[in-house]
Length: 45
Image (cartoon, rainbow, N blue to C red; front, top):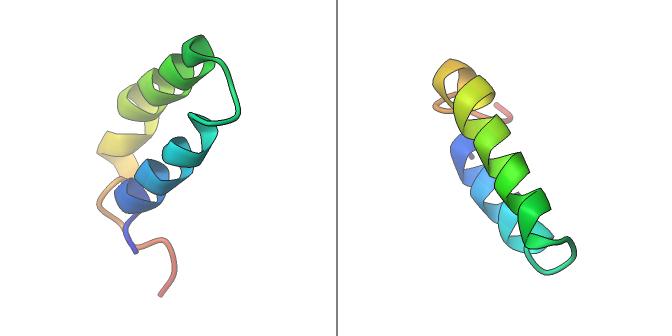
C-alpha cells in the first residue's frame, strides 16, 4: 500500500469523527509537506 492510498483511507475515517476544518488542515499539511516527499513510497514492504 502506498502512503498516498493510506492517507486517503485514513482521512475518510477522520471525516466522520472530526470537524471539517480539521480535515482541511490535515489534508493541506499532507499535500504540502508529505505527499511530494514520500507519497509514492510503499507504507510496508
